[in-house]
Length: 42
Image (cartoon, rainbow, N blue to C red):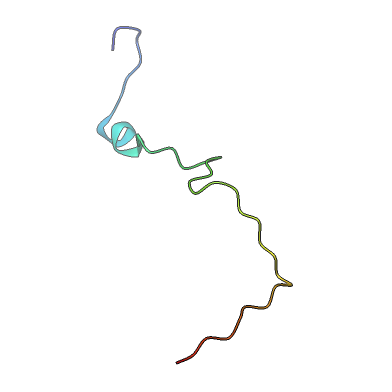
């Protein structure tokens, strides 16, 4: 590389364009564990 870094195939294989840490993929959720769902007919 131009700045003297040596990059191997293993280094490149480790990289990912998909960020997986500290990401809320589906937003914030408010979960009420006390709520009882209404019965449904089968």
